[in-house]
Length: 282
Image (cartoon, rainbow, N blue to C red):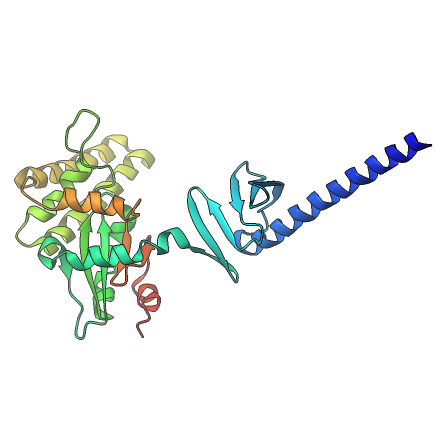
């Protein structure tokens, strides 16, 4: 009889434990899905560190950690705070003050400036690269951005880095450094981004065209134009390396990346109207 009761008690305890685990999984899922979407399925939630932390395993194999009150989330070494139906990047926000100070310390003479038309309402520092397609797209929005009273200050961020595996200067660096070596940097920026856009389109045609010979000839022509441009003047004393290193230090990992005067980081491409709205400009 005692053995039977003990067996029943153990079974009941296991049932309660499974129910508690299921409830915890459900609570975590309910917290995540409104933000991450309906596919944010939780496989397992395990309390760690004397119940001071929750380890959450997702259906895609990714792992994140949450505080037991489910108000904070740690994912890929980044701390987020739940704020209504969104996540606020706390780790990134802590860099705002530093970014603001670093941007204020960079003189216009070290940047490529596209000034606002009429009254200046905002200044945006844009870390840019020549090869980046969305950087080219953002540059084509420049007239609309400036007309809305926004001054753009370009800083250099060659995405491929400065040196290759053998220590040679990367093409990414040579292209962006070319701009900083010119007396009229604004015109040079427009010229080299337009040329790179043409080169990229020519390369796409090589991959897609049935006329491989003709497409390759057009690509070679664009490539020669870029080579001739860089051979003209792409080596000089410039702040490109310093700006690239600064970008990495303040959280820039891709381009375009915009930093406001307040130090807020706005990653990626935005249309002129969307950027103005984001900056609170009517």
